[in-house]
Every structure is written in structure tokens, then in C-alpha cells.
Length: 549
Image (tube, rainbow, N blue to C red):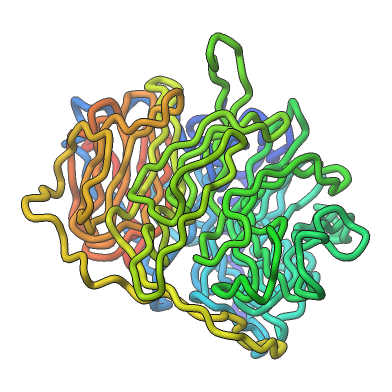
């Protein structure tokens, strides 16, 4: 190393050490909402509300947002990572498993950590990574070849690297980890490969595995009776989105994906627990406390990997610790997060696979004849896209696919280790071409769907009733997450590359930037030197805005 390079690195490390003097303790993670200038976890806080208390950007001045800096990603494909920001430093993953430390004010890159995946790595749906977690002076990332790594956040140096699942069998880690107390929690992807999914906890300092809970119960475990024969062995049940956490209850809430084989329930008779469910796990022990299954014996690939949004509501006159969940199956749910009790359910898009929900929230199936369309289609009414909840408006904001249907088929699937284990599929229903006169880019007070909407939309749902307050229609479908602020702004995007600021109370468009690339992550907001910034990924670029000086 030349002296010039050494001096440069030394100066960078001095600058970094000055920027990150304050340790990210568990206490800071608990009180993330008290640090609105930061964005310390994947969803902004343990409750996963994606709501910021920053107030500098308002409905009155949002039109004055301007581009401040751009960070390009050198790998092609949808960039689904959501950055975290701590004390002026941003940490973000690039595809597939690189990590960057970036000056959150200027976009300057301080260091890059590069991870080389095994050639055995295989993923069904893109080489995605959704971000990192932080504790102390360490960052944590899952990898496509099923490893969990710890990185020094000052230098970008690898501290430890532990295998979590066998990549040759399809196990991968695509979610941003969650830190709870002194543990790093992750779940395994790979549901389309006939894996047996799991959630696991690791010591944050050493990487030692502390416990593991299988989302597909084996013989002698509660729920195994919901799998016919030995079908549990290849039952799927993947985890690929970061869970939520209630510190008062000491429970983590995980959305579990589809069963295997995906579209042929005949090969797996029974309800197939704990697929298509939310599971409440004690982070200290890995013990299952309760579960709620949204789509038993799922034949439609309606993964329940959506994020559990935690909100305290006055439910019918009683203070209630609630969980809000817009599910891929097309129904919106309110659950009691202390015990999983079903409180409310209502469709938010067109649904014909079920005629409704019974008193316990179990769907009443209405399977369609062979060759006929099923709503929602193979992509569902929504997917993994991050919702937002505003305590100010009392509304949940979700990204949805309206009017899309599929014709499903089932086929006998043979399990071969490391190969797709699908059992059929879904073909888009071409009978829907779009409703004449549907006006995109316009919010309307809608309480029901139209049969042939065929578009993406952002929806505001009243959790007290399950009814939609407004719908902001987009031309193309959307994979964008959502962000709300204390000034009643809602930031969101779409596949056509528009980044919007909407009025969170009415859905009226206040500002739009045409960025040119698909938006497939959750926007974040933070402040540096007293100036509020908003960052979002469009295509292969991370783009950051702030008000004009």
C-alpha cells in the first residue's frame, strides 16, 4: 500500500469515527421514534409503522423538493434494499450482497464491503437483499447462499460469517435482519424449492446460533397433524421480510410464505401450518406463542410475508394492542396481537376465491371452475411492499394491485433437492383489459372495487371499519413501499418510475418526480444538520431529495 492510499484511508476512518461515536444500543432501538433524524431499523421502528415525526417538509412546501444526490447500483435488476441511517451515516445493501457506508448528506461512499456468494446459491425470484440491521458498532446482513455476516460499521471489515442454511437445497437469506436485545433474528427464503422453513436467532457478538423454530412442524410438534403423510418434509414456509416486535409483550411477529408444492394442495392434504400465517415468537427462547392462518391449504401462492403493522387502537371502546395486516389473499385483517384473536376482516380488492371470512377469520372457499379466472391473481392483492400507519390520521396505507386475475392450474410435482417444487402455476387472465374511464394519478373516495380496474394503487384503509377512505390509482402496477410523516405527507411510488408525495388525509397528489425506473423499496426520511431528506430507490439508483436551500 502506498503512503498516499494509507493516508487517504486514515482520513476516511477518522471522519467515520467522528460520525459514529454514539453506539447503537438496544435502548436506542427501543426508542427509535424518539430519534426521527435517524432511520435505525428496516421499518423505522419495531412497530413497523414507517411513520416519521420529522416536520420540516410539509404539504405547503413539498413542491420545493429538489434532487440532492444520487448513488448508482452497478448490478442490474430491481433494487429492493431499504437503507438505514444513523447519526448522518447511511448503510445500504447493493445486489446481491455488497454493503456501502454513505454520507447521508452528500452521498459520498466511505467504504464498500463485498461478499462473494457460493456458486451453489439459488433463489426463485431474483437476487434480492432488503437491507441490514445494526447493534453497537456492527452491521448484520443475510446472504443469498444462506449465511449471516457481521461487519464493522467503521471499516467495513468482516467480523464473523456463519452458515444458516444449505444453499444447494435452496435456502437463502433475503430479508433485513432484526436485532432484539443481544440477538440477531433471521428467517430463511426458499419456499419454491421444497425447503422446511425456519426462524433462527444468533448471538450478536459471536454469531453462535441460540435457537431455531421451524415454520413447518415435524412429528410430535403441534401443527404437524395439518400435513398429510410426509408432506411436511418439503412444506416450504419461507420467511423473506423483516418481522415486527412488541417489547412490552416480548413477541416478534413473522409473516410466513407459501406451502410446497406451491399450487397443488392435493400433494399436501390439510391446513399446512404454519404457512400463510403470522406467527408470534418469543425472541428469548424461540417459543411459538400463537399463530393465525390467513389462507389454509393455499392453492394460489398467497404468501403471508407482508409486514405486521402494530398499532394501539380504541377498539369498540376498549384500548387494544392491535395488528394491522393487508394480506396477499385480498383481505385486510385486524388481530389482537396479544393472542392472535380475529377482530375484523374485509376485502380491499376484488376477491372471488372466497365468499368471505367466518367468525374466526377463516376464509369460506369458493374455488373457481377449471379455466376460469380467480381474483386476486398470482401476484395477489398486495405483496411484500411496506405499508405505513399514521397515528395522526388513524389510517393504514398500502400498495395494491387492483383488478388482476389469474387462471390457476395444478400439476403433480416431484421433489428433487435444489430444484423448483411448484406443482403448477398461474396465467394472467387476459379477459380484463382495464376499465374504460379509469383515471390514474387521481385520488377518489372509493369504498368498493371495480371489476376491471387493472392497475396499481395506493389505498388508505380505516382499520376500525376495514373500509377504504381513498384510492390513488396508478397506470402500472406498483411494488413500492410507503412512508408517512407528522405533517400528513405520504411518500410512495410505482413501476412507471414516478415518486409521489400525497396528502395522507385525502390522497391528493401534491408533488411528483419522474425518476425513470421501477420503485421497489420503501422510501425513508431522515435529517442531517437540521435538514430533512427523503431517499428512495428508482431502478438502479438511490435518489435523495431535500428542500431547496
